[in-house]
Image 1 (tube, rainbow, N blue to C red):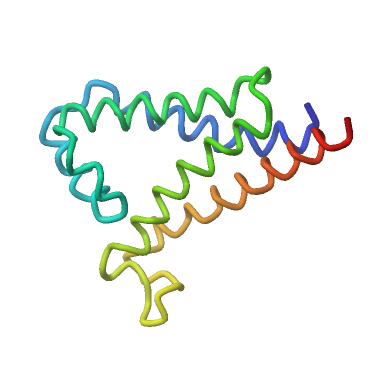
Image 2 (image 1 turned 135 degrees about the horizontal axis):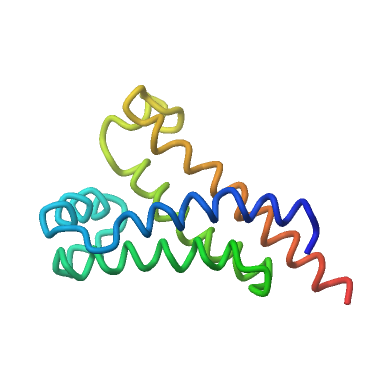
Length: 138
């Protein structure tokens, strides 16, 4: 694995894995609040119970974070996982009223915390492209 890919994988991987581990076993009320927010960007999560959503979210974050950190997971696969994760986060950013300024792109003061997920999307694209380039050379 190239050092640049290792760095691109390690930082978000550790962050996302830690977030997922922190959510394991969350109570029903916390899960319901997170589910309500997530449903803005991904309406399908409304079909889950809060308990199901809590498990889905926490284990999903553990899986994505682990895939990024484990060197035997191909870079392209880890990048695709991060892309799906960041797409869900950015869907919330664009769907929740008040997160962007009037132009619908730039973050408002309230949206800055969610807008940072654009960095995860950029890292995901870099990993997918780096993984594809390596595959195409063979």
